[in-house]
Image (cartoon, rainbow, N blue to C red; front, side):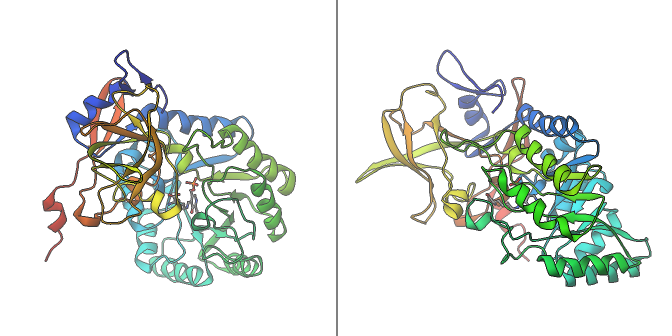
Length: 412
Ligand code: LLP
């Protein structure tokens, strides 16, 4: 993350705080978030759009890190927010987002979720199917609050190069409407007294390292009509490992803005929904080494794993690891950094290059701010980690660690 250093003792310093101290003070596993890093990326997105486009909105795709304090931080940056359902909407409201700047998504929204969005005064609802459209019409007709601003989500039949599990633009996607069905939904939305069609939405996938598919996607939807707003989703990838080279925020914004200007014409309102690129780099997870075992490989077992970071298991995602007290030391061993869960594939980093590790060492895995806490779970009764914000040498716990009581708190 921004401002990360290694002090004279070799300790990893995050947001001015010693990672070894953070682990001692707050326990492990723990999610550490460098607040300035999130702020800087939010500002970089806004500035990149402001430099290229008169009418735009950056919205935080909050599924990447749905925690009240993160919503509050990004609401404070003056950007909008995208929510994937009622739960994220509740968190976004609690975090202080203005309802008018919230966009509700979802391929299977319930009537309850739509009613909640209406009561809250959510600015935009993205229609994902004809059933979704009809359900929203019924909800709007019944509540008498006037028409709802909507976008129609289009599946452009464009494939971004990424893991199949997070590719969404292909024709056979569960998200959005294909071009023909979208034309139908557009006509129906335009004819409806309950819906105010503002434009189109597309999201072709996540962790994208190439920009060309965005232009193809814009080209694909250009024939659907002339609209004020084009929400082009999120998708900008990040570098999880040193060999990955994602485009810069500026190049990503340039690709999207120029595609809209050149293929759809000037004067469009462009909405962007970055999730990962806003929060991934700010997050570092701290673990403690519990066991080391040597067989064919060297297995370094830590006190977390797939309960706090499901991504290696779900997508074969790769990470790097560093020892918090020897952060600049030359690697001496290549190890399997493994979690504590009852699954052989609970491996956090397969082939971590580390100085010789010892039991009790604090291990840090960088770039874990996005979709880590978001997909955390209680497998094996694991207690979900706390979230610790660090800034100017101060650490603040914004979400506490779960307790055993939390595990049976919902028992009836
Ligand atoms: N907008 C929509 C409609 C989305 O579905 C998504 C992500 C985004 C924006 C934000 O995309 P981003 O900028 O973060 O790429 N759990 C997976 C990622 C799933 C992404 C789902 N949709 C992972 O850990 O990689």
